[in-house]
Amino acid sequence: MNQRPNSLHASDMAHSMHPYTNMRLHEEKGPMIITHGNGARVYDDQGKEYIEALAGLWSVAVGFSETRLADAAYEQLKKLPYYHSFAHKAHEPSIRLAEKLVEMTPEGLNRVFFTNSGSEANDTVVKMAWFLNNGLGRPEKKKFLARQKGYHGITIASGSLTGLAGNHKDFDLPAIPVTHLTTPSFWRYAEEGETEAQFTDRLLKELEDTILAEGPETIAGFIGEPVMGAGGVMTPPEGYWPGVAEICAKYDILLVSDEVINGFGRTGAPFGCEKYGFTPDILVTSKQLTSSYMPLAAIVVNDKVYDAIADNTAKLGTFGHGFTGSGHPVACAVGLENLAIIEEQDLMGNAARLEPMFQDGLRKFADHPLVGEVRGTGLIAGVEMAKDRATKTSFEPAGKMAPKVVEFCAEEGLIVRAVYETVAFCPPLIVTEDDVSEILARFGRALDKALDWAQAEGML
Image (tube, rainbow, N blue to C red; front, side):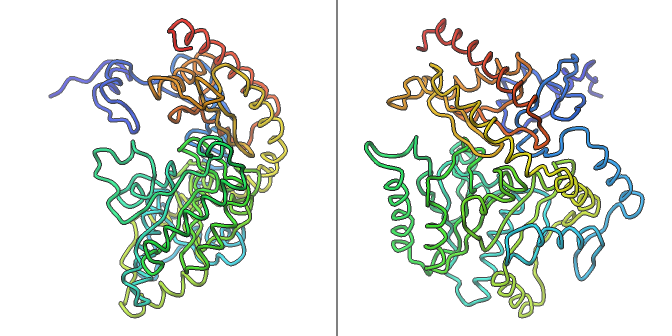
């Protein structure tokens, strides 16, 4: 029998495999073990306090100690701890949550399919598009359009939609037919002398040219995050999303708004598609749906999508897709209570009210010697590191500076995330003005520590 390690740290290093982690480095470095949370703060096993300025993984809207969600889970566990929704079965929590999502999402999105994660949801979107096009007698209409640096999950299909090299390399992805278009980030990808309007026009022309080159009859859908999250918090240029929506409608291409990070007020509007003025055919949400207290995601579709799928199920006798935990009653009960809290406490309004303080406060670091650009909206932001702001030149080696800033942030009691050369922020929607002030202060001290380190290392 293998001997059990004598501490949590040793046990983790000996037995656990961590996602998004250099596993050999982890064997040396070990974990930061978080033991409990309170509001926007979490605490490690040494008793150190951190402001969790990424809301876990872009997701804990109501903070880390909301007893109403624990109570909702417990009450549902006592009443009906599990049941499925296969073959005409149903239960009240999933019915009520679907009803609530139709009420909260943009007009015309009337049907809901539940999964356990955003990755499963976007994987399901691909299968839905293929299924409905086969049912409509369009078997060639199977390709997807996405964007470089977009993030849509890590299953085989959703990982293929994702436009990040680290999610593709040595996984043999993309494994489905997908074309990745230019990242809609004006600062990083505009050509010299190009205005924002010209940049938007170029991206829209690229989209339409790609559709015509591939053949509109072969393209099933376009998927995008209104604000790109895990690719570095990229906000779109003016006019981009209405233009994308117009082109997709012109060529009968499903428009999928991936709101897994954006949804429920993160951008300062209820949903990112509303922030940027377009209505999708399919909206995907997760994360803040339950504040990640329970795994749950939802796909909300319009009548055109539903009718095509439903008609094909009538031909075939079934929709041969689903998960054991689809619409899990405990997860749905938690989701309902979480959305009730978001509405009762006006947390979407809180994000909008704190947006100027949060965004303007971060933009005060725009002239810092390590910073290339500060961008964001609502309560989501990214601070991109650059060796030379004028030329947009990144530090060498690539991917070293932002993680170092994040390391110094942790020393200051601030948890953020490095995304390539960007430091990402996404605090819980419950944050206060005092919390935002403290986030900014701790980040400023960390940036200055990183500057001293960079100078000592000869990186500047």
